[in-house]
Length: 239
Image 1 (cartoon, rainbow, N blue to C red):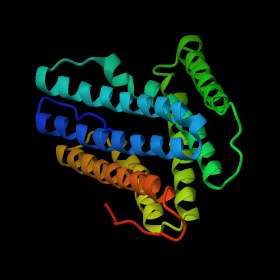
Image 2 (spheres, rainbow, N blue to C red):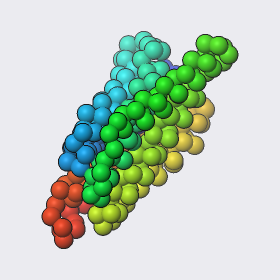
Image 3 (cartoon, rainbow, N blue to C red):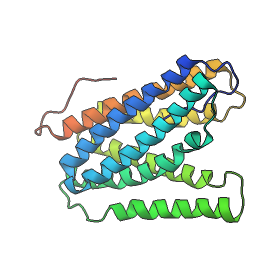
């Protein structure tokens, strides 16, 4: 959701502010998804809200760190590192809520206690992080387990959302979710570049904004389309 911060004193405030665009778009998408869950599986609405709130908090923490670093030169490492400790549990909670909503959309019973699935995944990931960082003394050993949890949760959520759109025959919505997923994979090689020229940071952030714009549009379309009477198969494209 937020690209890594460029190094060096030439990091512009404009790029730091640009980071808030995908965060805002992601927040909109998560709100629409929470409404979709509320309509299809009301018991899982709070789970979706909590997961979405954690994901948004992680993005805001990262974007705020960049803005503070660009404007004051202050490097709050804990604020930068808050991204995955917040985002990983968020996706771990959101994915089971979306699975429940998909079952509700298909007219199938939604099992109770889906939150336990997310909590179990979170406990496992944080236990592995504590073991690697505190016991094995691996430098930034906490990072990999949380990265894996966030990646798997994000992938599971994306697959469930594409499935939900396809079941509604909302091909445009499925395509938009697919574009967002494609952007996630496309950004990985760019994120691993080191050093990275400033122009590449702008490209990275623009691709992130494109993906999250499509994500927000798709989430809105899914929410609206899933509440329409049978036979109404289309909504205007928003991305």
